[in-house]
Length: 352
Image (tube, rainbow, N blue to C red):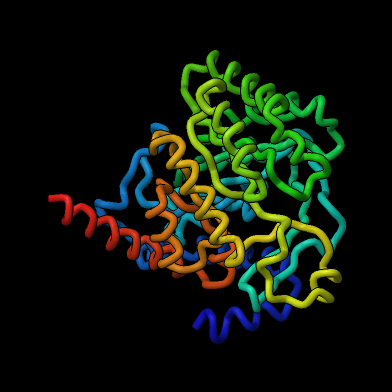
């Protein structure tokens, strides 16, 4: 029904407008007495094999929603009805910013992909903290943090630290986003020396806290393996707790779309099916290089239950979806968890 009727109707309209409409409808559904319970019961899949503790946090299943969908912590509790075990809010910056000029979000149905150049549009970290404190958490919530576009890279660590401190008592874990291709010169922060400064200041500030919050680093799929090795060298040095692999890509070589269409769309980060093989490659490499000691959240190109299992097979502890949710609808979370549970149950059975 979703692919045959609902999605074609939704895809007739501007992606950002449809995003706001979907959020409105989900909020409405959550406020109809009894309906919230019925939807969650029908979409949430439980199985003992799906439970896992990552970086000290207990996850009920392996599927979460990636950052970018709920940028401002406005509706994370409402979207828990779709069966996610965790939701990542953000990217959040110290002060509000409008992001890049519209249009800035584009669908590529032929490739089952999206291109976005949103530019960290958000209401600022104070708004996010206030919403989290006001509404509490019915689900594990991660805080994806970044710098304001106007902040010079030399001062970027101040922005990350401000977001970190402001959200510390409101989220369950943090994600340092230095890999989004839609912020001018942000990728330069992936340089080992620049990254060391940011991570060291954040983890140093954590030492003064009575509660330990895990810190993950979100990396770009466009990193070379040499640059990735440099990043992994900082893992223990800076006290990280995991890696999220990967962000969106600037590569267009894997697309079937015409050059004219891509030129009309312009720059931006590509997500969806074309990113899958590179994301798998990155996760596999991290797990191999670390001997499986680094927890990895796999994201990028996960559109089907089979994609989800592939990501678990190469070593990801958890996965996140975004584009897959848009292309395949809310039932995809349950289907992914069922397929992952079938795979993990088979492993456990063979191990006995």
